Length: 406
Image 1 (cartoon, rainbow, N blue to C red):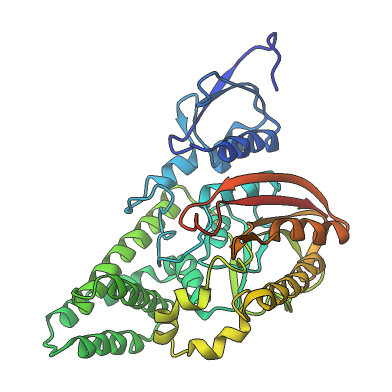
Image 2: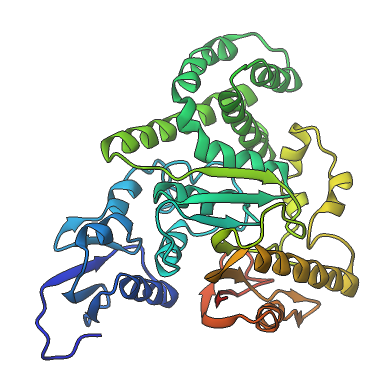
């Protein structure tokens, strides 16, 4: 922090969407990670800077600051490519309505705090909808994404790999006009026509792209049944293509050196990775009570030809009932955390975003359990930040950002 006698040379301004205390804390953590000396202005919307060792590096990586002396950050330019109503669903982040998504701005800031550099490797053993992977890719950081869900595997690949097949995706879109103009007698026939269209695509990345558009269409139908499935598929594909086109344009315009992404359908309790092989971990484990991930994505699993009653046993946190469900969840998470410890390099850090759920008016102490497990494994708890959670308020009111040092 600055003293009153130190000279102020610069000013950095927060993004307008920064509203909560945890975001302000993360912003300060970002500045400290860049070895920046600062003081917070009375408005809490800007910081005075006396020492800024590397302006270019700061502007290219910062998450919570939109400009430095009115020079826009790269993140400001990236987030301007947003075709959704949500400020943090820019580029391909918005693909698929996945519940329990990470806040990408938070993930970018955590990369900075963990000192994960371009070319290093981050692991997310519960990759979910791929937020960690996409933010890592934008920063030139390699990411390994693990999930037992084939839906998550597919979504994550499409979010990060579609730029590689932009031309094929764009050319294939031209044929959607024929599908739209075709004669179909009923909804089931329309859905079958969409499925046939996707299955006949030869290029893998292109096929995966339209497969996700099909999954979104089935999700939309669950909420808006009167809509024509083919029209929904066309609209979703068009919107997704626009986002991929924006991503390709940004890559070329700013000469982005993208990180490599690798995704695997694996059990987090048995990671097929070498010991001491990753430079950091950021993840949000499944919540034992708050979300039924299998039920939430049942329409998508059906499209992929999966029966939810058969795959449920492979998922952490959705098996069993009552106390047995909690016991199985706790046991599974011990194994998953031990695997994370095995693959994380010594001296590096692990971030766990987790919250306490409520079952039968009783709070399940998942946060406390997580801290206890990591402490027993020899980690120190560096940070424990409260974060308000929305959408699950009747079950969970907040979650915690836990940062452990190995």
